[in-house]
Image 1 (spheres, helix red, strand yellow):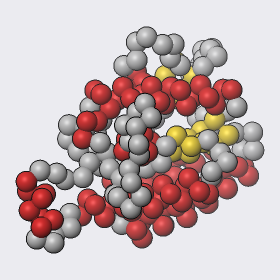
Image 2: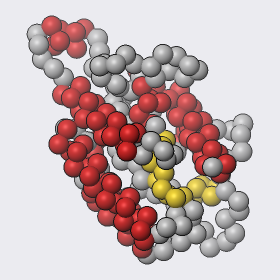
Image 3: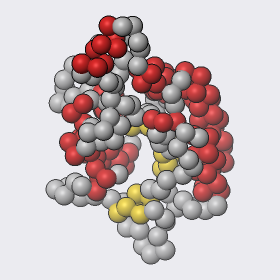
Image 4: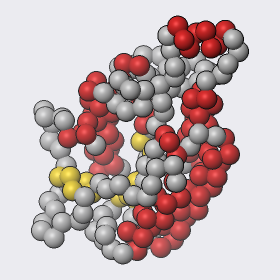
Length: 209
């Protein structure tokens, strides 16, 4: 969202954390945090509570995004994907006029440098490698299960260079590009610019669908 707000050379939607009482105009993006990090089921529960409470009573499209800290193991990935699928079905049954779009779970940068090299030589696998693999398991299932529906593929954008560069080789652990982060998990200015513009393009594509 910060990257989207930093775009200053293209028309942007109106961004709010509540549905406004006044005329929202033709393009409104309501964005707010839900639930707690490392407890993704609370995010699903609060999101559903907001929907049933009428907080988004006039929106035509909704998307629920998780954080990288929500998934660290394959078991967590499987449990969350099952819970997410159930949430999607409940929402579609209850609000058939609302379109659900999906978002992959973001990744973290993998450790690098001399210390990481020595760890690998000693056979010590960094836990963040397994965590990124778990996130990718969720993302692969999301891409496959909802392949005919709009997906904002945040993980793929974070792990591949823009402008047609070759994506990661099959079998390699996907990770947030070092160029896009200063702390290993959050986007820096360059990363925010790339992801922000990609999300703007994604939202425009929804209006044409």
